[in-house]
Image: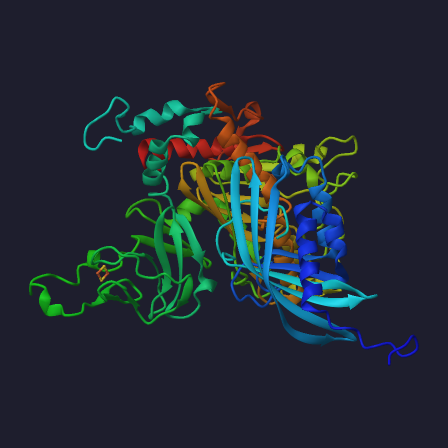
Length: 171
Length: 443
Ligand code: FES
Ligand SMILES: [Fe+2]
């Protein structure tokens, strides 16, 4: 039996735990709690929205978002800036996260990454215009000090290679 | 809407002679951004006559390689034929007009229409008609109008492919004139003197007229205000070039814009082209990767020439009406008017052959930050463009003012114009060309 001297191997998250985590993440973004959202990522975490369906490389092809923590912070700092004109007034968003499924596991250094896919729909309203976005999201989750953190999150929009009006809020 | 019966609102088609009354030396009438008749006239007289940038040859290196794109609302194909020649074809079947090729890019031995199976060679020629005997023997299937019709003129300057929808007009070298140097400068950044436009494309759009975008590209008046959300308290912007340790100095010591912006040189050239001098970046670029890149340039060109190559003295160069090159966030930008109040813009990173890989990775990384649809920079410009389009709906006033620096425009002996800093000279230069294109139809 595991005890304090012999801890159990880091527990694989249950589907219910992952669902609760993803719903919580969606709510943070809808409530514009961007700093708390950023904190969900590991120190080396990143957030990626490719421009091409099936894009495998963020280094050699452009991306709509490809943010490490530092760029996330800069983006959030700008979202809080009084003169971010494209968020005057701010967007209102609501997200639906569904069809959450466990994918595979990967080992990265000493960490275990639990990959989960989900379907995402985002509605955004600003200045009289409502837009909708949707796609398949992959979260690579890992456990740090008992809680789930995002090592990386990839949002594959169904219209990744389409033409976009200005975007300010992460999906 | 009535059909066929003229209504009280029906207007006579806009005459080219009306156009001159919409542009004054230092202001333009709001209708040039709003009136569908002017948009149609622009499409015919300006976009229908000027050389338009289509793509770069590195996008179609091999015979049969193609990319599809749109010129305005017109679908076209940029393709390399089996003999190596580059063609721009209207993406339209010669039979009953269907779009032939729907893939964004690929390689094809020939193109086949989905509807009745007509087949076209990669130079547009009709080469196959199923059940040929159903047509009278004397119908000439070699008639080029039954193929995928080629744009009448296609020419390339050092891999940059341009096409014109007009059979006649100045040749590409004459059209480009002094802005060829900006293309040369970008190519010189590659130790192999070769660029590759293979890093994908950012596509953004805004609900506004295309001219808001082209006016913005040499507008040095706006950054401090439009991009305030990207400027730190010390006036600096974030880093956006490989090897830099800091970003451009947008704000000055006293809280306002950096006074250096008032000294940046501006040049206006014939045909509406223009450029603005480099942004105020401070300090030497460095770091191990950048030093390795510099070494490779020196190996080819020596110290002195390398220093000149790395000191690109322009920020944005506009090739009017649809192309802009940027040196800082190194890219090709193509402006595509879709409707009088809707514009699409495509932004392609320019990758350099012969550099250490991280240099090109940085080009991509910084371009995401500055020019993606979700960028930290471009989105605030788009907000301004959309606000102009809404603001000019009001009956408050009819004219938009482009007067800044107008008393200091200097006409040079070679027919170009110079000015400095936050002058609206580049816009005035654009409207000189615009008026000539629209009123005469040619330059
Ligand atoms: S429309 Fe293309 S083959 Fe008939
Ligand atoms: Fe700008």
